[in-house]
Length: 395
Image (tube, rainbow, N blue to C red; front, top):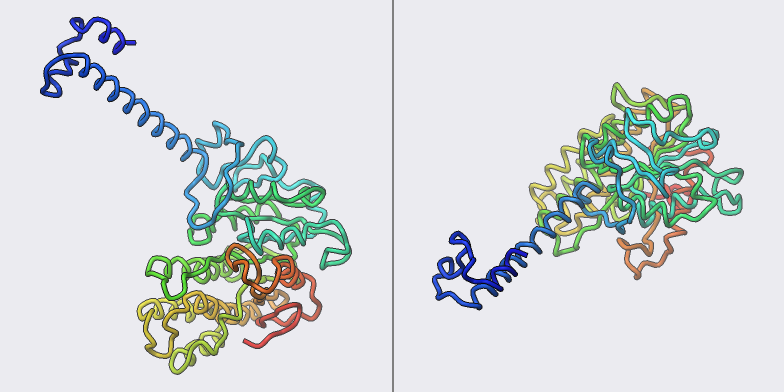
């Protein structure tokens, strides 16, 4: 309105907004037009800034996990809470899981009456298909046979978690809870999640915890930043959470017979390394702590891209899974001594058609998910071993 008035009466333009002085040009209508354009630009920049600030209150940074945005916004109380303490309202309220200290969406009595399976890294791909398989109330599609499970689905962001929940049809959706955000690379996220498990299921025997979070590399084009993200997610984050659930002094108390199932890949087979690297991998797998495998990850990253000590020159993803299998075997050795009734295994779902596996893969995501889910109830499970399609496979 102010600028329009100036256009109608240029003589009334205040000295501090004299566009002729400002631009070093002679006064005239073109100066007013310039001022108007500048004002419009400032207005647009202000709108963009406000929208970005509003968006940052809705969801934490998403890292590498993708998800579709949802129209459901967080409440004012949630926006003032720490990221891990946020909850959802509205259409997704029945499926939201909140962090320690917030009990707005605790598991229902019906959900607690069923055996519980936790699937970490389940917003899409094999993780989401595994959730759907386990939560299905149809015995013909349930690997357990008799009944569905209450499944805790974790996602890196609230948005990706909402999208995952929305994709699950009823009646299976009633058996699914969502916990977000959980980025296993972040120690505070892992701490909040482990704490929540203690509070949400203090007396309930969790049947299994499936650790599925993972990212792909870029083959020979993998740069240093991507390589570190692959190692941090596929190996270090996964092993850290596994240790915090099984070996830490303040680890949750699980029922007898709980199964810790780590999703890996036969791309991480021993044959991808030779010489000193192979000897160190074997030693790390035989240890009674994953510490040696963790140290090997640091050593590998220092020489990545070369064949020093027998490491592959380009397969970062394969190395991350190789180290992961070694750490699973070492963790199983340690858990065998402290909790002989608990089982720690790895499972290879095969090369499946997912966003990460691409459309070239020979197996469907459903077949891969069934291979993972079958380990939840497979009889005579051998701790420390690798499985695929319910059978022990060679590492």
